[in-house]
Amino acid sequence: MKICSDIIPDTKTGFPIWKRMLDVSLVILALPVLIPVTLLIAAIIRLVSKGPILFKQERIGRGGQKFVCFKFRTMHVGAESVSHQGHLHHLIHSDAPMTKMDAHGDKRIIPFGVFLRATGLDELPQLINVVRGEMSLVGPRPCLPYEFEQYLPWQRERCAAAPGLTGLWQVSGKNKTTFTQMIRLDIEYSQRCNLMLDLEIIVRTVPTLLLQVVDTSKKKAVAAKTIAVQTETILSARVVNH
Image (tube, rainbow, N blue to C red; front, side, top):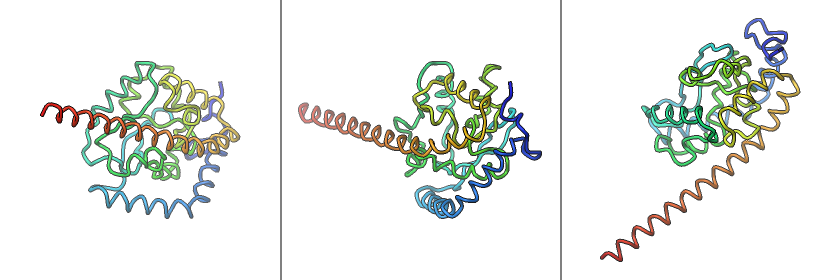
């Protein structure tokens, strides 16, 4: 079956030529907006937390090749990763929705970090990876090495296409889907990959992100209300005891 990487590849990246042209063109067109937004986010991170502005992490790209992925740092320096590995292991081996750990609060995240993650703005530096030809604007999310090691042989087919900032999974339910559903959507993308599909996914990404921000705000409001009720109950109990 023909997959995305088989269609008239660019000699440097191995991506389809149309995909490489789309990526570079859209990045250049967006620069007038991207530059001030990027500088503002960098300044905020510098103000609210000590440490580097960018976070670098090894990820798995097309064909299982490793590369260094860039993100805005949204966690405190030295934050442990064991809890995330445990959370990921649970998602891979269950039918639970692909919710993030910070959906219910995560002390590792810096101020303003939740907003950056909910809006996807923390991933803007990955445009560097796009320009370098390590990623595309559209494609499966690049997974972590310890995640890739747990994949079954058929699941590794999701890496047949170039990894991307957004993709078919992201606009098809994302955190409401299971791990297996995510894998199947990513494989479907690698098999259907074409210009019109990429453009459709890019257009659908904006409203998807807006809905994600609203959903995150609602969850934070519910969590805050729950904490307030629990605190009030504890205080009332102490008054009665005294």
